[in-house]
Length: 67
Image 1: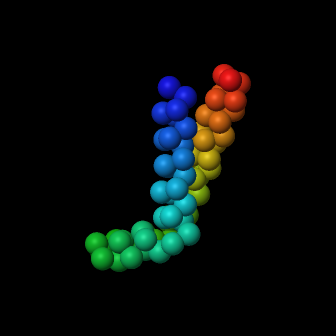
Image 2: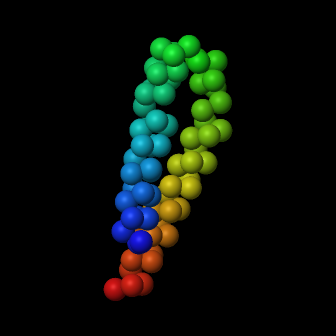
């Protein structure tokens, strides 16, 4: 369970970080025609990044206590 939680946290953090700090979603929304929503991405991406970082930290702490 712990390894799965750690993998989920790391993968989620990497994906959200890529979407936050590179224009991947901006270009994608522009292509699809949803460029009006680009201004609201920060309201979703930054809390999601925080949640995935907390999941990763929690999994690392549980793994350290287990050993």
